[in-house]
Length: 351
View 1 (spheres, helix red, strand yellow):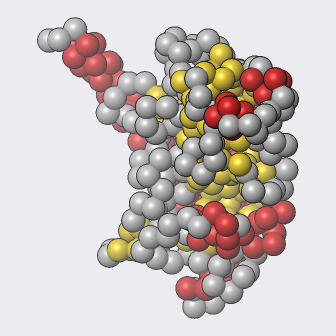
View 2 (tube, rainbow, N blue to C red):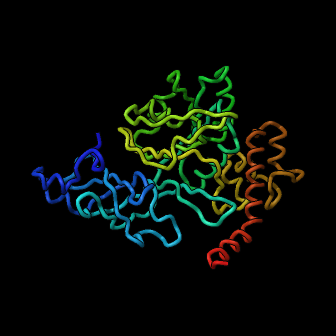
């Protein structure tokens, strides 16, 4: 078990004062990874000389500005790797933040700017339920585009197959994603289906677990790691899940780190032009390379090779429809962008 400095064990300096002496190295600069950021002080898993092998959890003071952070980015988020030194009897001070290897970001077309959800992940597992809530290819595909923008491998995990009338429904749903080149998993906590395969995918990696509320992310983690004891919500009418994870958090497990993210109700790819969207639908990108029209939207142009592929059945119509909807959303966000920035500047000026 990981030793916890907050609420379960006395902090390192307090233990030393009580006679449980730690080596002097324990108070030197140490490394850490941010587990949670809500509240006035983020929680980090701290490792270093003189500390237990698996590290200790401690609250951290964040200097302003934070060394290593860019002025216009989220300064500190779950998954960030930091250097720390002890500060007082129960906290550490962050000395600097390391550069991020990757970052999943949330955007909103109604306002400028972005929010980093989680940093430094090796893969994204997108969880979708086969039933309750009903699966949305559009929401799933938005998350896959997000992972593609971040250059992070994505896995499609179709959960709650125990609620389907037939497993053939699950195979039909994931077939399009397998054809597009994505790794896929079919899981059921109730019947224990696919859990061993999912755990193997998590081993030795930092994984972001993303998906809508109610798809069973917390139930999957509880089944794999019962010691986590994550709260599980119910699905309310009309099939929408309740939020059991209210803020992103990084969970240390025997297999690696898992970023458990809150159910995402809205997410739009960041800084992506509508014309670039096809690059993040692998099967559309492959076909579009042979399109004779420059800057083709692959939506309504007569003679477009992508439309011909849809009509002939070589390209999934469901995936193409998802592409069209996301293309139109990006186009609308692009049209609104200048007025949004203008309003934001007026608000900042107090007008």
